[in-house]
Length: 279
Image (cartoon, rainbow, N blue to C red; front, side, top):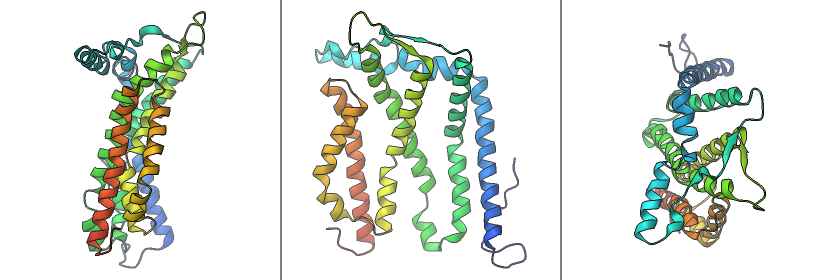
């Protein structure tokens, strides 16, 4: 669909590329990425029913798969509190253009997420010529790993964190005389922000590997502050899932702590490859 020429250390004349030539290649990379994201946003915009009724408003329905699985688990272990009904609040629109703007914003975000594999591939094509053969071999599969971790974080937030947050905050009241009527823009922004943020959080192993390679952190440092990290993750899990139910907080805690332990393992392995003491 597009004419790619990629980034090269040399230009068409066989000379080393200048700063401005590299900048021109980067500009092409950015424009192609934005174009693909925009086209996919138009596709998402056209499927409004799927985008909203099925995806965005899915956690608002008591038939959402997460609620059904939790209720089945609650029945087996005699914890009826796990049977969640999120229909105790209603969504309203208080702005004339509110629903249209929400449609546009979600479509743009959906297009960006759908275009992420292509964007990562474009960035890889841009930086690849500046790497040595050894670095290229060591970085093989990086695009896939980054995308996989991001999508895993997004799905974890959408199916686990977001429903728990909606159930608690949507049903929380300071008085029985105050009824919850949540603005559509508030609901959408909270769902999307939390989901995208969790996708970024799941990139922790990649970040740790990068910092280890740069010599900023070491496996010994990670192990030294393991207990501190444990406390921080517990606090984060409590903030993300403000429900007083400890079971809900543990559901969030274990994957986040697992990411940290995976980061320690990967950092130690990198040190062993360099024949350095991991501590």
